[in-house]
Length: 284
Ligand code: FAD
Image (cartoon, rainbow, N blue to C red; front, side, top):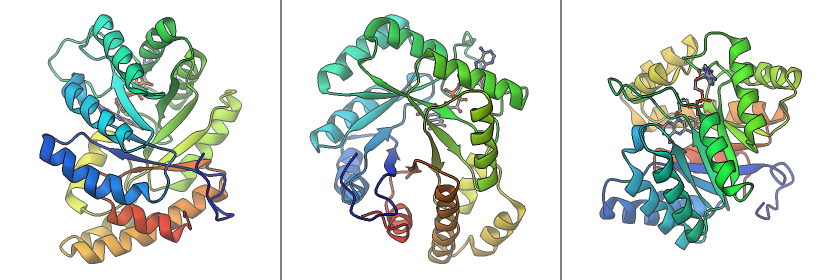
């Protein structure tokens, strides 16, 4: 863990998520912009998403390599989807040669009309472990508000426990704005003997329409009061962002009270709101 001077955040992990830009110019912009600005906060790692069905395979690899080159611990997201086991293993060999130490293993978002076999994150972890044993630290997704495909809360814990038993070392949650969902989730994990660190995923609020669209797909609940407040400010980006920073700062403070071991920011390749929230929380 990087050296943090502030007592409140001394033992808290901090990480930032990026998506792979479309082209080299986009990569340059990310490296000079968000990655560079957020690196000043000494994150434990930065992660890079992986498009559904492997659609960003090359882009994810390229930007992971460039982030590693900037001395950031870059963590690729990975899902099996339509990619063969051989191709996944070849990619892992490349990652290992580049110096990747951690992977975020996912089922991934399902591509519609692709006739995919249901493979779960657990299956990908088994594949990684079979070939690489403990050479990679494994992070997985967790869903305090219950994954949209889960038939019940009980099933959510059962399947989450299977990922942990397969070898997950820690988990990052889907984002949420209701801190009590996290509190109940931690209690549920305790009851199911799930002992890995569960790091809340944090989505800063900067754009109302895209947040609503994305939350519907991800199964992230937007509380009614928050929805209304954001609607009122949706056409004034500065006002919405200022309000969002306040709301999310308070959420993070509450999550620390509940025992969150760190925070993972879904940055959407922007740095303004994430860095303001981190400053409010005294990450330095
Ligand atoms: P899993 O843990 O495999 O679970 C998926 C669903 O299947 C759940 O409903 C679970 O309850 C159910 N399930 C699990 N095992 C079984 C079983 N044995 N039998 C029946 N049902 C089962 N998506 C991307 O495409 N790219 C990304 O880069 C990406 N990054 C993400 C990062 C984080 C931190 C998180 C939380 C999510 C991310 N996602 C990403 C979204 C994620 O891929 C979707 O939420 C996906 O639908 C579930 O992935 P998972 O690995 O959590 O699924």
